[in-house]
Length: 160
Image (cartoon, rainbow, N blue to C red; front, side):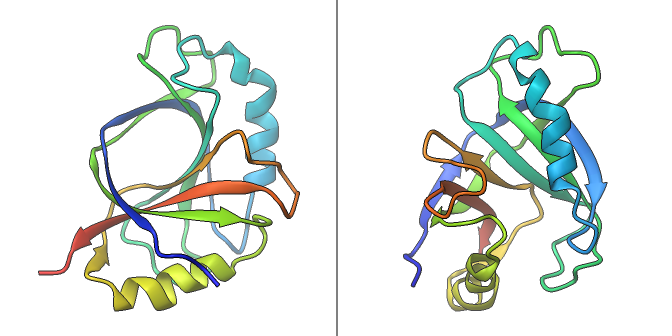
């Protein structure tokens, strides 16, 4: 059903965007993106037109815990932090190793995450790392469309 991920080292990423605290049980993703998108063009130094949806956990992700709170970000990767629009924030994603999954489908279909955390990760040579998780929403991303495509970046480290 799903292909194996690419294992990639990601350089440090500088992001500008907006964030909201939420959980999967109280998902406010739509509200976050509705507040970000009308103002996204105010970001002066985008690295590309790709959008980045990011999740930052206070502690390691507790797989299956729908009440675990995290900071959800709607962002754009930038070349610098000059001219940050009002009511937006900066975030640096530290460099590190990621499993990158190509996903095609609706964002409401959670089967890909069941595969990643329930099948792929436990059977891989990697452990989940405590860095941000993110999705790159590129030119093939179409919100609410079953043919939409995105890249899911899961932070990993080698098992010791």
